[in-house]
Length: 459
Image 1 (cartoon, rainbow, N blue to C red):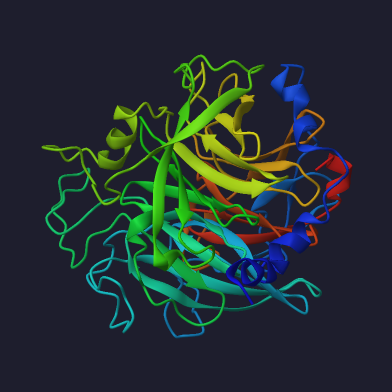
Image 2 (image 1 turned 90 degrees about the horizontal axis):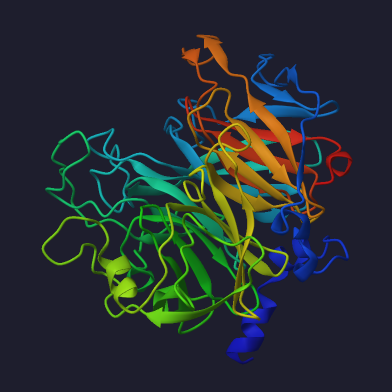
């Protein structure tokens, strides 16, 4: 069996999910948004009780239900407490209705060591991943365990066609680096890398250095080619692609490139919603250059690409493959600095602006993104208003509210108290059959499984 046949033979999970899509074409997707003819729909939202705790943690449209799981400090099956700061997440495997999810924890050095975790990448870094099992047939959470330990500020990432999760570090910290508060870090390893996390067991923490050392956010994998697209959470930021030497075997290396839009338009503040921007790619010569020479700016990779004409964006965050294209989010881009959603089509080498928020009242700094098996987008807010909202964009051009954060706790579970309605959403991901939406709220750190009449929302 040759490599291409082997690669194609290992793609059934994501390919099966994509088969549920409707009949509309990629070129027709979100045309109303692109032309400015979009409209909004705010369904009647109502507080709904969590089926685990009985607390009204979310507001949802009529007919929707949910169950929570994996609260911070809940015991894992390996005896450790569930870490906090829940962020990026995805369904990465399915076996007879049992779904495996991998969830990031955006922690840095909250603990001095990883409690003796033998396979920790860095014993002084508290970030990592937990894997979760969910029984989709019965709507019940089954299990959870530590799957990656000793990494730093694992923000987002992305699922792969080979049934793993690529977890991204959102920092280029190393021993002696300073936090924003001036604290000097004690670390045993350099950070700013991507790690491949399996569906079963515990990851061997091998940093994928050829994919770049920068302020990573999220990734998306083209299942036809194995090319990995990467976002960078800083301003200015680059949008990158990693072309592996062997598809599906990222540890064998490859080349890192940055996107260049021909003509050099201002994509941050004056992007044309009617334009189809022609793009090309420029090579990053040194993917491990964390900083520009003589600085500690975290922009060493970006500056290499920019000198060759690479295009700047504002804070690139969520990234997801769906509908045959790659969607990625600029959380502070646009004329109002409230967020943009971009669509990159690799077959035509075209970049299009799918959506631009007119202000935080419409959409407040979108972050993580996912694609519904029916073709719509779900976007996680990470802004300043309360409550933070979960949004959807339908292919027909409708923006709608999907869920509101309603968490006002008084110590009912694990002692957490306070008004958490301003905490960000993250990690949205659908089950392959599209019946369940999984999502996190970062503080105090909770995972939800939501079910309801998605078709009634056009999602």
